[in-house]
Length: 562
Image (cartoon, rainbow, N blue to C red; front, side, top):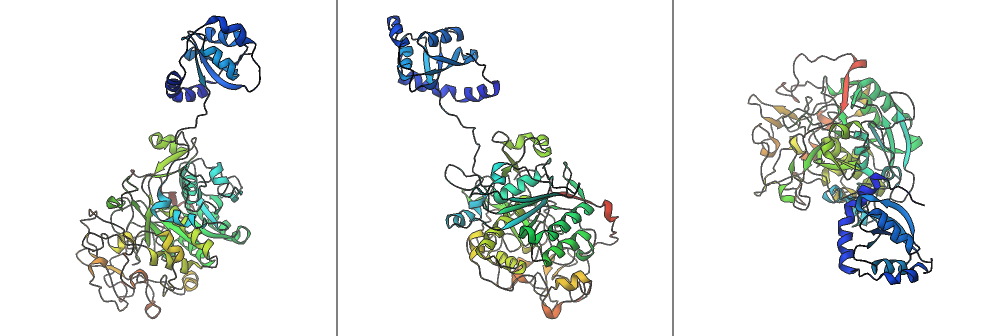
């Protein structure tokens, strides 16, 4: 019986056929002697294998196989061949018949690039933790985004356990969180993909972490405050049921009010108060100052900017801050982002039918399995994965303590002369170091002087220590309201992208700087105090709050690759 070969499979096969043909011609020269045919036809039918037999035509190849007692399994007229099931003796007989008959072993082929190096686990030191057996096991990350594509590397952990514990769609109030955009899947892939390369490296930062996928955005990545808050409410309500420890927020909108007046920010603060570590994207509106959006402008949460390896993951000499990465300070005087992570040309899984790969087909790689995308959204996913590693090591770590250890262990980018390459308003505490963060023991270095209960109850709100002078220079004040004259704490727009910036191990900000983004207990006061915002020029005049139910918010979708 013949069967027709599927065209798609045939094209995949042809990709590797040239090399197989060269090997066959080099190793198996054919010389004909037609008198051997009767003997070949009587050979045993045991130990058969699959082969490709090529002749002057497909019909001639088929006849040759039938004549020696083989079985034709497929017609391959495109190369004048057939697929055949043959014994070793039958193969030898065919090869001895004529120089026009060629026999190739039906070798197995793999899709090119189906498991490719993503590099970011090694860039942040997560691979060293994987070698120590720290993989995020038992830690649940909630991803509030466009949904999830339940592909094996996301559906199953590195230990082959089912790890998507729940899905929820705030748009339909159902458990169907299918990802028709691709952004949410890409984010989840960076955090937890359990795929491994041939070298044994995991593709994701925390390959054994659990997931809860919550959808609040349309297929084009757009959303509303109402649906995002609805999703946040669901996450808090289900925290205990699914043991949610981390919440990833790779979306945002321009700040339209003080941080505590924004309804999404209020909901995010409520999540933090419930002992869930919230990680938020700084936004892709950089490089100018004061471009951090909501909810990244919430002083309590961990706000993440992006750096890039400039497509050379093994060469740190050209690593730099990504141009799109939003910068601080916030309008309320807080230093943001808190730190930076890889966010340039990030490879992650994405459903091939989704909005993003259809809009940007040039960035689809590895036969639709992976998609290259840049943004602080991707950098945020890296930090969420790192937090899963930290919480596996110390499960009782509180949000403030986790933030403290992340920023205390981060490495600031420096120039050849030792000066910091970027100000604290651009890189925060510096680039994340996953290995150092897991073993960091610093305490009480984040959110000092802030009182989230008072903030949520409206009793008191807080201001950071950033200000701007009449020349447009952003700077930090000390707790007494005096200007800190250290140049690394000042930023005048102009030379934003120095060359030769490195994030070497051991380069950290001077003592106290990573915690001075917030006022101390003695200096906590209502925002607007002359002692705290001495210039009074950080917040624009005439800011109005739009109707909450229709306020726009969106995932950070697309910026040029870096």
